[in-house]
Length: 190
Image (cartoon, rainbow, N blue to C red; front, side, top):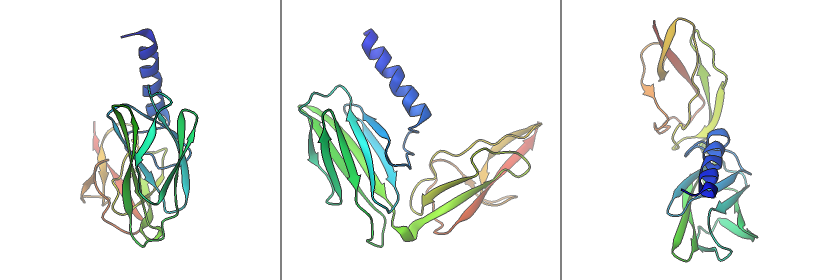
């Protein structure tokens, strides 16, 4: 691998680890690096949001091949400003923005909630400590990245719907509750 590509790869990994968790970006204004042939998912709340999309290794000939009617794309040299309009449809919606550069295809899937579907999940460490106490999300979405709590002398078993017992929740679990709710840490003594 060429030195330039290795450095680009390392930078991309660092960006993903620090500000762009895979399939769980819930904030606007981020720079989203798309790789050729890749698909990336962006979760947006109901309000109008703008993000910057950069198609890596693309030439200046990148065009928008397709997009939902509620998304606008404006070219800014080698990037695109992608704006998602406010969702007042009464339902969650999703669509793909497809960028093309010759034979290279870049795909950005956008999921946008309706205001009535938005909720807050609170994390109860159940005797431990957790740095991220809440997430704002929406019914119908996946939970995405979940915080990892700590408790001296215990192993963390996961997040559950009840303080004792309940259903185990993972990053890939779809949120079926349409109201604010609490997830509880479960522990096993070492």
